[in-house]
Image 1 (tube, rainbow, N blue to C red):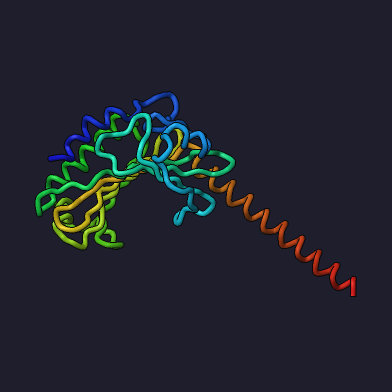
Image 2: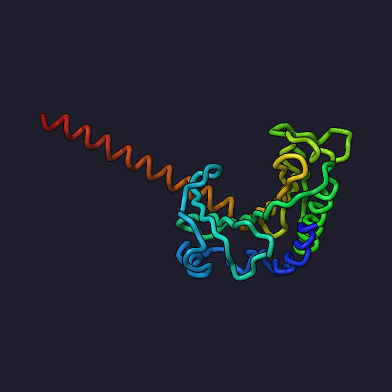
Length: 221
């Protein structure tokens, strides 16, 4: 199965260190321009606003110093103040059997790799069909992949030194799966909240300036 190659590829991911380091040979805090220089001209797209996290900008790219062989693309998350604070990896799609058992083994392999490398403090697991969480269903989790409506498995890891990692196995229909891994830097939450606070303060300052302009206009006539 093509997906098994990921076990070799993931040896490129960082080993555990005193701090939670960014994967793929990159560095937390990198500016957008620095990352663009590392991945190379033509290997990245446009900087866009995140749909899920207000105040964050995203950059999609296809190359990094240490990129697993079955990479479809990577996405970096940035704020102006903190630089790179998040990374996500998306695998190429591969085909599993109708019942999805091979896909489930693939998912377990990813989880084992993350657990061994990062020694997470806490772990939460969920399985979804569409947007419905199925954690309490009695059947084996891998059977979900035999349904076209199955969306994903998810395991969320909290790291002792701060930050988090989330592993998802997604279904694109019966027997077609791909994986994603999302890495959040130790300062991800603080950086987002700081950015939102700055944006809110700027909005309040702009509102105050507009009110002063209105008052000036009234006095002028």
